[in-house]
Length: 404
Image 1 (spheres, rainbow, N blue to C red):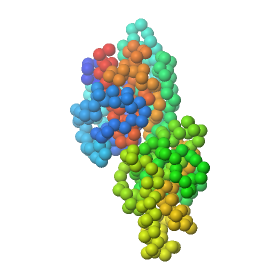
Image 2 (tube, rainbow, N blue to C red):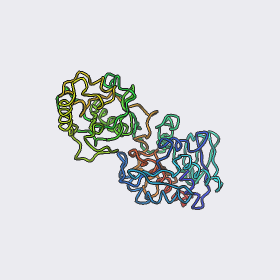
Image 3 (cartoon, rainbow, N blue to C red):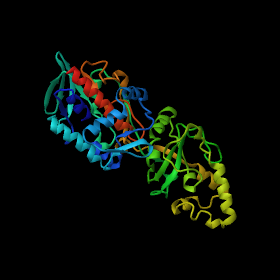
Image 4 (spheres, rainbow, N blue to C red):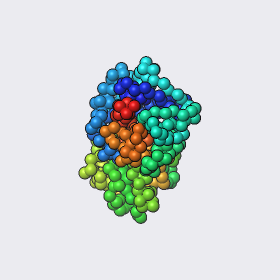
């Protein structure tokens, strides 16, 4: 929709072919129904970061917001630079996009999935369920596979690979972590402030310093489930967990530091600074904290008022030394990630190196453009993925209109 409006604004005649029964359904599900559409803070793109940075040099976050403000959307900036609709409803973003498309008379044909894109002498031919359409320029903005029914089944990638483009194998990103069942038994339903660190699996978890982290630790609210650990801070680690499994042939171990719950470090959200990567950095503080409690309280009351009942039951019977370890670095061996149906973002996709970041024009197929999550660009949680989708859509629309 962003690409369509951008092209229309340059005077091009635009047709939108939509596979679903309506456009923009994924917007309604984004940001827990609030649509975190951009982020004013430092850019965080673990996948395709250089390409994303080049796109933002041509279309900045401010230009993305100016685009939406021009459609009438009111936005507000919240913690960590996250930008939301002022009304707090994702529907407002969809309404301004669809409303402007209607006013400009942009034709949309829903339930009309594209089956093939062919090169013809006068441009490109798009073969869809309801017929064939010829155009001098085509923008592929099919999104990724994440989100189950809100994503695609992988067929959209074939539209471009059939034209010679390269597919980076898609994987779930921003996805809950699956743990060995014994590691989270009895803890389902707990929401606790914590620091999560991912380390390579090694023998003898207890009493030994874990390996160096595989990626920067994440702090936030960890949610224990019957299958593992969820919450934004856990989902941010899914990409690194997948990569570690591919590289080492084994799933890593998640270490959970409960120091924020104990008041031993500030509560915050997001990626921690590189200097804070030691998984046992708070162990001395936890040990001192427990010794102080042990002087004041009987042993059977040591955990009361300090940790929730479910966690207290799990930790009952530990020695003071073991208890300190578990509160500073509770080991949760992983068994996988939840999968594409439960992911918020797709890592991988069509190789962005085969596109010009200033125009999103294919370097292989004249007249073909691509934008958004179809490309192998994936950002962290916080509006980064929609921000790239909108910016790339704006650039692709403008460039395709010139081509047309």
